[in-house]
Image (cartoon, rainbow, N blue to C red; front, side, top):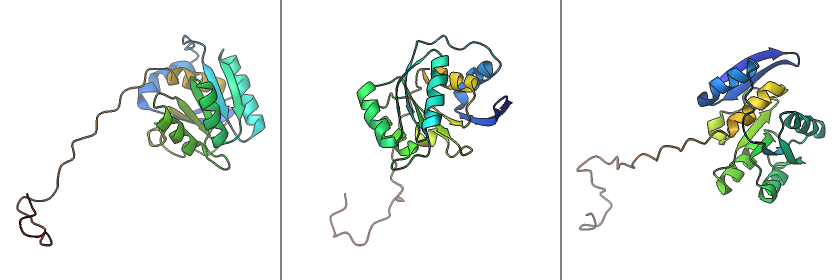
Length: 183
């Protein structure tokens, strides 16, 4: 789901999973959503000025920045060092992009919370990346705060995979099998 917003910093889009829609709208309407614990946040962005700005915004949301890094590989290493509550990561970075780093972090720690940030409009659905949300730059403070708060909601367990069903029609026999080999 994508939402369009306009504000003093320009217009921007926010892509969120449907279950966070109400929280997002409450925050955008100015209702206080910062009732969560103080979070430890790792920031990864290849543009130093963007990383610094995001760190200041995270501080304004009353959360702690554990480190600001500039590549996907550094994000993975910093995640291992700090085990932050949330990772705020640029979608496009040199050497190892944010979506690949996100998938790697989630493969090592399925409970990890990653929010991707992109200068491109809705580059990928959050479900495809494993990210909690994808924010479009520039990110306004109320949107960042809502995304951080939503990221700390308990993750819904994924449905178990469907049973694998043999699609071979009944009575079909592979003629290349030696006689007596089929069961």
